[in-house]
Image 1 (cartoon, rainbow, N blue to C red):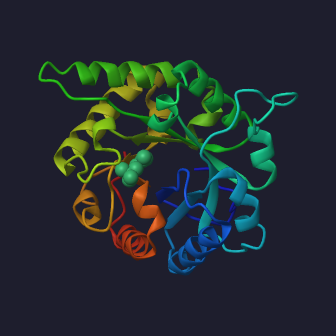
Image 2 (image 1 turned 90 degrees about the vertical axis):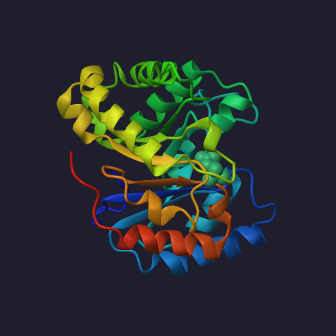
Length: 266
Ligand code: PGA
């Protein structure tokens, strides 16, 4: 998996999405300082922090460690030029951002189409970034329609992607009904979905490409449920929202992920 930290061996990821928090730079500094302390003990885990874009340069400029990488929550489908208020992926790349969140449900809520999300994914990949591609059903139904829609979503985003990019794509399975709630999907449900994705991905992009993709889970992950979720085979980490702002929670979460046995290889 691509990382800007060249000499790093990473086999698990915790992606921290701060969303539109916190309000002040001073608070951002405090959270990031705590993250630096927690991450100093990581050996196999990469913490990817996605702060609001206007805080990133400040937080990153004197960070010399290897266990934290920076991600951008969103950037423009325009690559450069006169687009008032927009930020480009290449600008993000130039301030050492190496990950991009793509197709997060919060973006969909403000009207971003999946076509735009796909364009953004392509731009981020061509800029050399790793992408965290969020996919997941809105709700579950007994007929299993959600399985079909997940398959279509994966096919929509992954078909036609150039082979060289697959090692830089992390699929974040985020069932929309589990995001921002007090309850994550159960480890049983997540396991089933990971197995399902592992089964259908080779048909969509070929066996070799499929084996390069990592799968993580997002949706109400915190220090209270991480131990249970770590029992899921073939899961390479988590995408975390609310708990990424709480040092006690993210410290416990990172240590649990770091200490867990390596997820089974596919
Ligand atoms: P949550 O957010 O951890 O607060 O549920 C996850 C996400 O929005 O990706």
